[in-house]
Length: 332
Image (cartoon, rainbow, N blue to C red; front, side, top):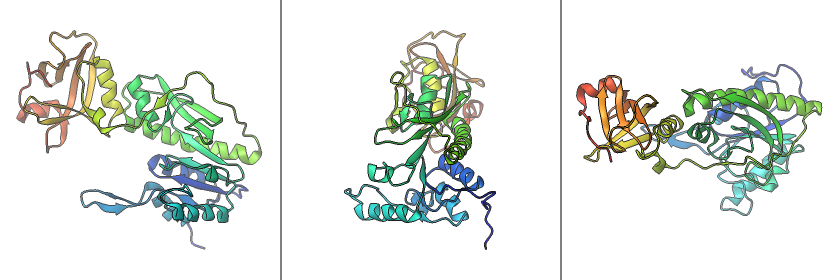
């Protein structure tokens, strides 16, 4: 027998299929394997071009599955009547053959039709990165930061045909730090989700997992992030723009244009509470080693990290050594 880093610690009854793609999901798969659950099948997105050479790259979930010598399928769709019906039929057949008791889903990236939701004996469990029903949808981590929420969390949910509308099984809250970006909050939630899904599977195996309907009040939707949201709108309050910078780090990032049209990316910024704007929105009050202070619709935004076109992200003190002095300029 070939040893793997995921050798079962104890015999488990449940057979757990898994569907996911990015690192958020990979961490959950590692935890499920580490807890000793048999994973007869993994579904993940097809390999995508990445890096400067645009070579095909396996998803983080596929990489974990390969290390553990698990069966992997990468269908482009799961609807039997859809564009990729042949691949969907293959995935359905593989799920049936896997005899999975439950399918755990985390940031998979494909819609699961009812024909998949009902295949496993216990259905499909989703690891969602918010406290439902707040922030149903594609970008709960970014939207929670952007909205200024004090906390978020993980909800383990029984999936149904709706958009994150299924019954809640387990949930755990997590405070959002004032310095959290989408990267740091993602990592905290990935760790929390990995722990919570194992707790949920343990409870399911004991027959002690109890679904609860989501509250009817407090429903919000976390719309998918669009590239055109990256532009800084100086008429907005400085506090809102500072949250936007944190929420959109690293993707799609935030940016503004210089008067000559050059695009400057923003890496970090903070709202200055003690300084009132003394000019129109977009006017640079001053450029110092501490930051680039820009008037907003309400308050002043201090930008501390910038990236010139074709350059690297750097602190504003480095920018000032070779970049233009923007003091007094009104940014578009």
